[in-house]
Length: 245
Image (cartoon, rainbow, N blue to C red; front, side, top):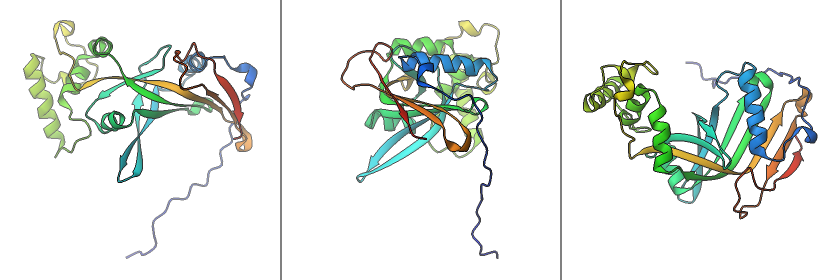
């Protein structure tokens, strides 16, 4: 038996070659600046630029344990960044106990990244329903069928849950297993918003824009605002600082 511990050595030293980022390039609002960068990413070959890593934290026996996963940004409004989830999932439970989170976007093709930190608030039921009703039929079925983050014995168990939900709401077979497929009369099939599913908004108090440069001498600018201002992210006065890479 090979007693040598297995390891993976990362030997690449990629250089980031961009025109850089200057203070004069930035909007006074991080929301406006994010929208500008997101639009650029969407128009310049970045696949799924809405993909973001969200980190939450749990506290057990006095020890904070962070956890991260990739989710999809669904909207940016004047108050913050919106995403949707099962409230009973791990991130949902952690946000219930500790309503703060951070987001990270990485757009490799552009050598750009955005980091967001802030307080998390649940969307209203009306806001969650508006988005839920806009989803493909299969996604609405999936929200009901998946006991997100819990242990299941096999794939067949999940598929049975999907078929049970399809039967419950009178949905044509296999709709939940074919993401995005349109079925004749989809819009007439009522799959209501689950009580355990809905949206969150991360209200930022810190947003950082990162632009890769050669020799790891990157450009970083951090927006910060006072936590008790009571204004929306786009209305508030933000301080912008350049950070060392």
